[in-house]
Amino acid sequence: MRIDVITLFPELVATMQDHGVVGRALREKLVDLELTNPRDFSDDANNRVDDRPYGGGPGMVMQYTPLTKALEHVKSMSSENAKVVYLSPQGQKLDQAAVRNLSKCPNLILLCGRYEGIDERFIDAYVDEEWSIGDYVISGGELAAMVLIDAMVRTLPGALGDDQSAEQESFESGLLDCPHYSRPEIIDGLEVPKELLSGDHKKIAGWRLKQALGRTYLRRPDMIKLKNLSDQEQQLLNEYLVEVKAKNER
Ligand SMILES: C[S@@+](CC[C@H](N)C(=O)[O-])C[C@H]1O[C@@H](n2cnc3c(N)ncnc32)[C@H](O)[C@@H]1O
Image (tube, rainbow, N blue to C red; front, side):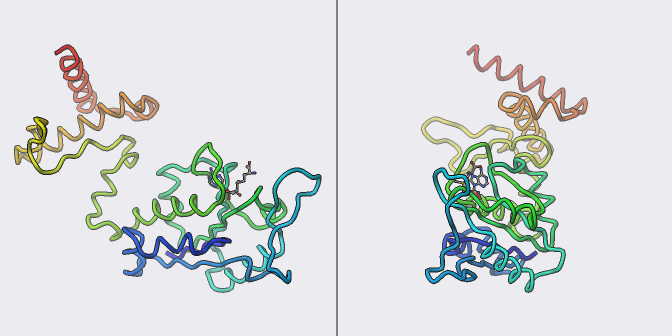
């Protein structure tokens, strides 16, 4: 997979190269990350890429021409059918299914806005999809692009030490993840659930599924409603609710 990012702050996005899962995926060449700054394509003596909005009002707008030149440059180095994605609070809200779909594109071009945003004519002419990371406004598309890149890279085969860890994560199966524990077995009088210490893989899997069903039911009823529970899952959820009730009555 090749990801191009068009950004006025390439050094911000470049920090991903040195850290964690994305850094490792880049070093192992599972993904290629290329950064392009529209300032390098400005005809202005001071490399400006923004101007005041027509109609007046606060803020500046990223201009059409430097962005078009930057995009043409990126397209000349990438595949012809690369998808152009604008990170925008006005886009569709990202979720795990969208992340998985986007990660199947061999070549993505991510466009980061700044200021009041970018000239609408550029969006009309070149942007294939607009995606938002949530219903709030941040100062630039870089952090949004980094969120998307990180989430996509995690889904690539080989990116995580164990490919099953991506499958078990929240949202993958329409459920939140189960709780996790590590050593020591007892700390400040708090114990690890005995099922996890049993060494019985079937029992452990059953306990994890029960917890995932229970916390999804309690924290995200909207997700549980969408999930068609099997008889076994419904039974586990019922058991979870009885156990929680008993615990709360203690
Ligand atoms: C200050 S924002 C512009 C907000 C714009 N005037 C609006 O109200 O829709 C500057 C840039 O940050 C990025 N951005 C802000 N919030 C975002 C979000 N929730 N998701 C994705 N990108 C976002 C976009 O690239 C946007 O062009």
